[in-house]
Structure formats: structure tokens, C-alpha cells
Image 1 (cartoon, helix red, strand yellow):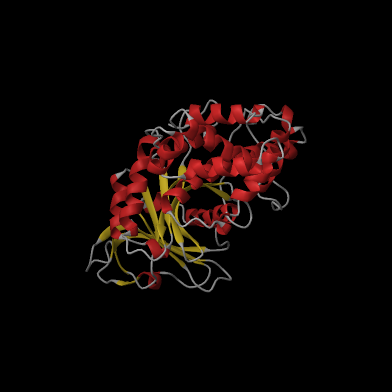
Image 2 (cartoon, helix red, strand yellow):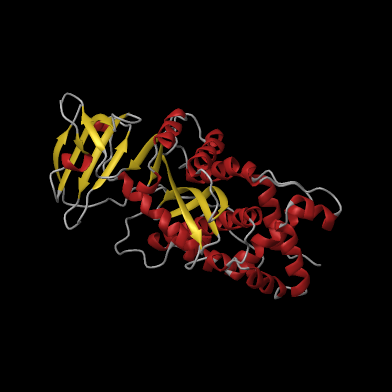
Length: 402
């Protein structure tokens, strides 16, 4: 089948960034990525139809796409030679790819990296345990493990392994904050994050016992707060009776909110950013992009975790490219310039005067679809890790412990 110019460029990009074996396997993944971007959809039939519109038989294309996701033994029967792909080997290169686009030109120190850990479900069939880079109101998946929804597995063991796989890609001196929701609070995860030299920021149960330094009594963590509109930060020990965790407790209760955030981190109180945890919500926007607001992964009929994990590699790269194109397009619009002529990340970008109506992912998907239809795309891309959001406003500081 005749390949168009954009397919060759996509294949070259994948080989330059990810440790993919040369041959039919990489060709199939490039075909998947090209069709996903053209269709603005990750479903097999939509991808095959978008590729067929560029030339080729839809049934032949569909079979080639299916072959790319098969396990190694099935693929050997199809292609006659072993074409192995361990998706886990792509996690660190994928994170390094993102970090290379996050680093501002001429910066002496790498920007802080915020990772969010969370699961997402596909109906009642699969659960994707995911680690994502969160930035600028979106999330980029960099490590994942698909498991059957009803399987009896240790999620903590899987998540610790995913973090271990990402560690080699983090440059020395990078401040890494790992954000986890209350359902994933675990001393095991806390110790693994600290072992890697990173900073955990775990949301805790309000009834978690906390013992502040220099005080003789332990109380439920939420009790150290002062009610609505208050912030309390202090050093101490959490859960002293079982798996004691020395750390910094943050009790943040924004005005107009029914319940406070109860967070445990390891940074000193005077260097703890109380609203940093608000960035964890961006992983929910990332899941929306993978599902109904973007690639439509919730419609997949795959039940095999290995095949689903390989499909996620395509969706992760598609998300990265779309968000990078969306970043360039949005910044050009803010500066009043043509995005095709904005060849580098500007040193400063004026703050948006109005909330973003269209996500970076959707902006990039529309932009990429039009560019690929012409057989091209932008090669100079970047990501801008902007600060924010900045959690519940109007709080008064009650205390800051030692």
C-alpha cells in the first residue's frame, strides 16, 4: 500500500524518540498514530476509515492496525519474525521527550515536575493505573498498566514500579512532586516516592491521627484546622500507632467549601505550597481527553490488557503531539500572531483575559488534523508548565509549625 508523506514523518519521529524495533511493528504503530490524528479519534473503525480516505482498502488497513496490537507470539505468526515490544521500555523515553519540550530556552535549572497518580476505568472491564505529567490544565500520560477490573492485584506494587521506571528520565536537581488522591494514600507509596528523592503530596483521610512537633497531644488531622477560610501547616508525625510517617500536614479549608483538604507532604512548612495539590485535578482533564472529550477510549472493546496497553502508547503520543500543537496555537493567538510563523516559545506570554473555552488537546487535534491532511505538521514544538490553578481562595493562615 502506498504511504503518504505524513506517515514517513511520523515513523521517523517515533524511531527518534522511542526504543521501537524497526520493521512491521513500528510501521503499524506509525499507521495507528497517523490515523488517530487524522480521525481525531482512537477507535479502530474510525482510524481505518480516516486512513482509507487517504488511499487504501479499509479492510486491509483494519487488519494491519489489529496486527500491530497483537502479542508477540500472534505477531510472529503474522509477520514471520519476532517483533517484540515491551511498552514499559517506552515510559522513561516518553517522559524525557516531554521534559525536553518543557525546558525553557536558556534556563539554568530544570522546571519543577508535577506527576499525578490515579486510576481510570473502562466500563467494568479494565482499569488503567496511570502516572501523568500535569501542566497547564491538562495531563500527559507517561506510564500506565492496564489490569482487569475484577483482578485481585496490589495496586501499590504496580504504581511503585511505574514510578521506578520513570526515575531514570528525571534530570538531577529536578524538583518532582507526586500528587495522589485519598484513595491511594499508602505508607508504601510514600516511602517509594521519598526513596526516589521526590516529594509526595498525598491527600489523607480527615480522621488520620497527627502529632505536631512540640505538642503533647495527637488529634485527627482535620481538627488542626480552623474551619472555613483557614490554612494550617505544621510539622509532625502522622499515624504514630501504625506506620508512622514524619512529614508536614496541610489543612486547607477554602471559603465556600464544605470540607478541607488534608494533605501530607515532606517539604518543610516554610517551603510548602499549600495549593499545589489543586493541580491534581488536571489529571481528570487528561482522562476526559483520553475518553469522551478526545480519543474516545471508553468505547474500546479490547479486554486483553497487553493489547490495551499498546493502544495506550499510541494515545499517549497522540496526546503529547496534540497538546504541544495546541500550546503553540494558543500562544500565537494570545500574541496576535500566525501560529505557523511562531517558531519558538516566547519568553513571556500575556495572561489570558478569559477562561479557556477549548482545551489545549482539542485545539491541537483540530490543528493537527488540518496539517496532516496537507502532509505536514509543525516540527518546532514546546510545552509551557504554567503555574496554577490555585486552590480555594480567601484563606487565613492559622499556624505554620517548625
